[in-house]
Image (cartoon, rainbow, N blue to C red; front, side):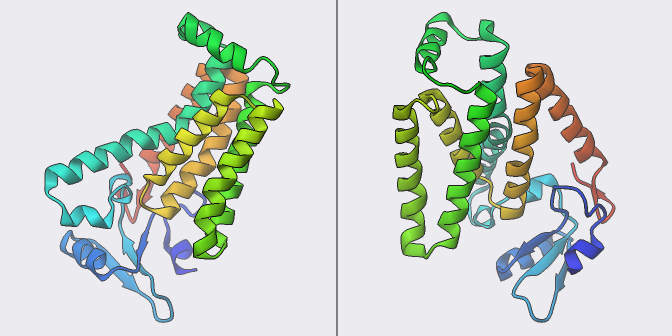
Length: 235
């Protein structure tokens, strides 16, 4: 409740405060000049102000040499872009921009999609929703069962869907890479906003191709550039 009341823009999909249960993260942020709000009755402390870059910083980064931490954080930036745009790029290229794919790869994708009854955008939305449902089910289930259900369920459903001709094998690969990329984001609240934004960008890619992806990218950048966390610019 307090977090939502004191945010600058409560309707933004991006988190504007950082919450943590770890005392070492609180200490490090205090040393970096941020304020920490500790509330009676909850194990989480709120940290403000935050930026996009602090949300991509894992608590373990403090314990590594700076070049190792920089390398891992650079990986997170790369896979943040992959997580947000990879399915929409696939949909846009398959639907509108065949000339961007090498001929042999295009023939391979075409043969894999030969018996699929749905257009690429419907296929992508179906698989993304199924993957998100499996992920949430794995979190809610007991710890011993949850990981097995999320991994085995994804493998079994993906394999069965390809054999039944409902989705193509390249789409399974795209969704799997996107899912792995989203697991690299260390903050759950930030990862959730990226997962949410993936769907409108897929819709833009399915309706306008690469132009739609560029429109989505520009709108996100404009929003991030205008966003502030307690008066501090988000970027």
